[in-house]
Image (cartoon, rainbow, N blue to C red; front, top):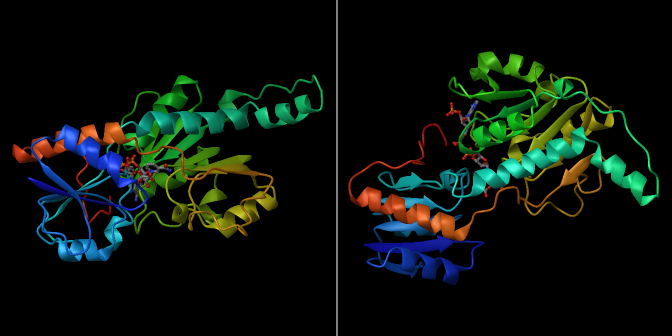
Length: 306
Ligand code: NDP
Ligand code: OXD
């Protein structure tokens, strides 16, 4: 079995070594233009030339959960696209989102500002019941985040394309459930894949439907959010704040108003990082299953876009 590796943004050597250790029978090489045809690929943001020169691939393993960048390319028809499912990302996402929600709910920024001035002062505790958290996307990551927030006894709402049942979470689905979901949420967390249906989903109209004091946490993709609409709603007081980990252009350009906005916390697309050894173990397991003719989790439905 031949495997070609083409991942921009990842130092290739540790990946190649890890893949070789996990798949001792395989011939694994770093892709370069003109490389011989391989059976399988491990990719992240490869150039179009990669797929143009590798039309025979049986499967391409994406070393991330989101495949929006990959699906913009012309892909060989028979190549299965397999994304990471979890591989150590869901616990990171749960801690990131819980941290953002709790930091806002418990007003830790205000406490920090006070204590830095030597002030020993209390704030009136806010009622948890007044902080329903709505999660858009109840997939591998969204469901884990929903369960983690429910553990802290926040009222948790979830929205997905198809109907779901998740313990401790009030679930809504489809376009018909969206309005009710927004009206039931005060904090809005985006964990949707970026598709034609979900692009710009957080805009002036939808964000205005959140409960008073709305707070936005975007950990999915920058193009889910209309930047200017968020800024307008923060500036007119309709929204209380936002934590943003993903942006339309990354790195976030130096002149972007998000950097210095007093109600926005920016993090550099780090809420759930790809973990090399977990990812390699998952890819090796899936490759072995595919070789045995079994189906694997995380195969992308190109028509659906995720
Ligand atoms: P999944 O595919 O497991 O889950 C996607 C969820 O979104 C599903 O519940 C799906 O519904 C729902 N969904 C899709 N389209 C719609 C729609 N039109 N309306 C309503 N719900 C919809 O993905 P993951 O949980 O693994 O990952 C989610 C995203 O998180 C990734 O695509 C990626 O963009 C982002 N991500 C960000 C990271 C970061 O560091 N910031 C790291 C990793 C991922 P249904 O269940 O019915 O199919
Ligand atoms: C991913 C990401 O999609 O890192 O995995 O954003």
